[in-house]
Image 1 (tube, rainbow, N blue to C red):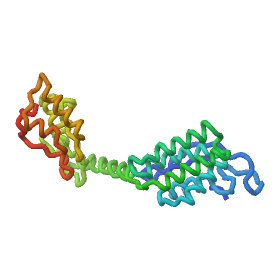
Image 2: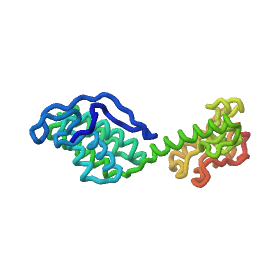
Image 3: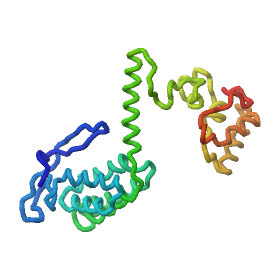
Length: 263
């Protein structure tokens, strides 16, 4: 019932290519009293199949299947595979910023450092972690972004070689002064240094936040710090602009003149 040739760990890159590495063989007997084949679980399943099922269950938010797959891997001596996979799912299959990343990490720590990963408490940690991942908002936004940006990079390079404009480009485009993302080119960058963009430019353009803006206390301290600056004299318009949230519908546009020289 195990996978053919399953003596190597199999993973897939964003382009679908198969990547492998040697993994430990299974030991002991399965539930039926037979010696386990390489990469066979206690239930007689192929480890690769169970591991893949776990990931698809997390993606599809199927808590029951995810919990079982995690339990099967943990009890079968494949906790090392389980925790490696769950950690991957956090970055490949769940919404950015999900606090489940810390939850999975904590359960792994308990299962592997405080207890034995295949004993009762270790198995409970495995089930908890799988349930947490399955209950989190699932998305492949990071993997899709990686694949898309990589494809655009290849397309841009090909377009340059052919001497034509690319049909698709990075969000930053040419990233040059005077362009949409001019605010990013402050004195910390080579272009900003060339243009002699100093503290004034950074404070009034480069340091703006949004769309909620600073809270009242932070905005007041920001304004006072600028007013008390002995090296730069800010106008009232500059002080107001620096503490105004960026437009959520157009976060990069800055006025040409807000009362200072922009340097």
